[in-house]
Image (tube, rainbow over all chains, first blue to last red):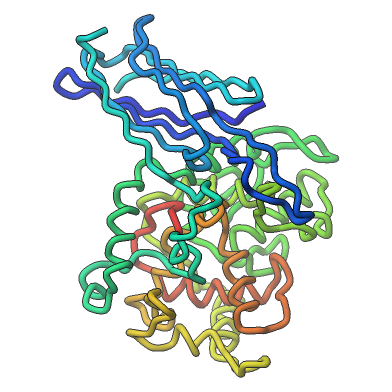
Amino acid sequence: MADPMRIRAVAKDGIVSVKILMSHAMETGQRKDEAGKAVPAHFIQQVSATWQGKTVLSATWGTAISKNPFLEFSFKGGQKGEKIQVTWTDNKGDKRTDEATIN
Amino acid sequence: MSSIKLRAVVALTGLALACAAHAQQAAAPKKAAAPPGKAAAESKSAITAEFDKFREVMEDASPAELFEAKGEELWKTRRGPKNASLEQCDLGLGPGVLKGAYVGMPRYFADADQVMDVERRIVHCMVTLQGYKAEDLAKNPFSSEASTPDPVSLVTYVAGQSRGMKIAIPQKHPREREAYNVGKAIFNYRAGAWDFSCASCHGEEGKRIRTQDLPNLSSKKEAIRAFQSWPGYRMTGGLMHTLQWRMNDCFRQQRFPEPGYASETIADLLTYMGVNANGHVYKGPGIKR
């Protein structure tokens, strides 16, 4: 199973700034192993963040995103103590959802 | 949804692009931690200054934290032939006390009758508490594309517990003072195919290899750079590395025989360099290029 994400969400003046670290190999499919065979592509395809049942971020990713990606975004309206959920899905169908409380 | 404004910033925290040929400078051989401030600023190259800016931005979202999280889980989980956790492991401040342990090591441990750095001690605990074999742990001790060894994540977790604390490596016990002196001798010992010593590159101020500024690790002022931001997440390849790996790689670069993993040699060297950095504030696991 995939390793957990680290999510930080801080509310300030009605704007919540969210910082997410994800643990993922993000293989492009271009790299070759010692035997000269291509390492199969393995990367996050969909990322979404929800707050109070609303999607506040939805993104489609490709192989140009680095290994162990860092994502930062902000949205209006969140309050301290509310929860935010982040989910990613990769091209092998692997999925991971983590939750954080807004500070 | 229109009321919600979005701004997404995706930072490239590693080099996932196989075709990123322009990133060659990121593959340059080595870079110790950020200089301690204005003192080293005069000799800083433009590239170093730019990287320091990047590091500052990334400090509160370092991928090293992913390894801290993994290390925490490994620390608390019952594992190994003896099915025990590491929570009874004594890192010098009592069993299970982690806060400040990293900035007080290497130190002398009476139970093992050895001076031990963090990784050596963790390996010792994995052997005595969990029943792992030292030979097995020494087989593949460094991070690779394929895997991150458990001691690496554990060291990162322990190091994270000393974030923002002052480095205070003890020199009270005679064996600790001996380790310092032996470490100093190793640091200055010239040998190998290139007649190199650690001091050849790290014994003078204002030296560099290509664009990399080299810290003078024999001076109080710059020794912090061998301690700060280790263990470090290397963006070249996206691997987490500890000082055990760094010392091993320095030996390789000097064309020395390979030092033993978690050996006395490494503990002595780390004692010498660590004590030189005493008094500086440790910022926690960091980022390397």
